[in-house]
Image (cartoon, rainbow, N blue to C red; front, side):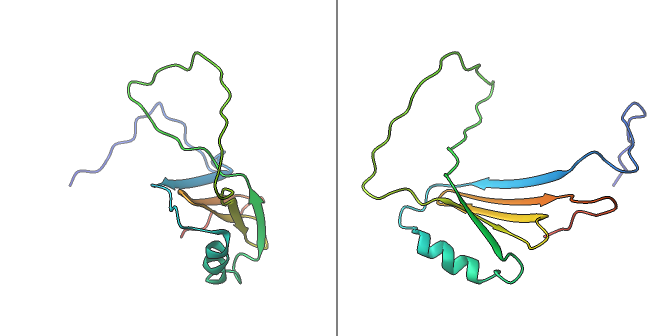
Length: 122
C-alpha cells in the first residue's frame, strides 16, 4: 500500500480552525416512533448526556447530481393525524457533545469549547 503524498500547496495548522464536527445519518421515517421511545433511548446514556432540548424536526435532504439551482420560493403546508415527533437533543454537562434524534435522522455533534481541548471520538 502506498502512502498518500500531501500536496505542498495545502495549509497546515498546529491548531485547526474547526470548532464543530457533525455526523448525520438520514433514513426512512420510523412511522411508529413516539416521543416516549426517545425517552427510553435517552435512558441508555443519560448519565453522560444529562441535558435535553426539544427542537422542530429537520426537513428531509436529498442530494441530486448534478445539483440543480433553486429558483423559486414556496410555502409548504402539512396536516397530521398525530403531531410530529420533535427532534430531541441530548447534551453533555460540558456542552461539547450532543446527540440529536428524530424519526428519520440520527446526528452526532462534537464541539471544541476551549483552548487546548481536543475533540473526542465515539
